[in-house]
Length: 81
Image (cartoon, rainbow, N blue to C red):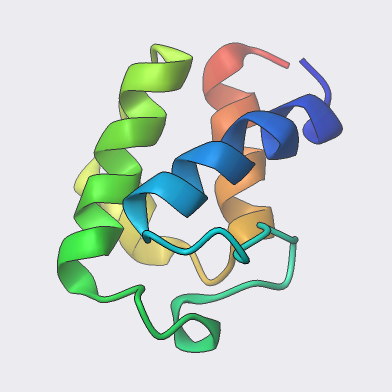
């Protein structure tokens, strides 16, 4: 799966979880950039991604992420891409 395909699948997940149709995940995007992205929505995002992509993340992996680009790289690694 390409990075673009992952971003295409992430967009509706982010918009749904954050209840903000204007949010478009980009490599540089962080929680600080989105008012609706708090600690609870962060957990909901991770769970939504795990369910949608059929992967699971360790808490330590999620804690190390600094932006969406790193999250996409982690997803790709879990998918064996």
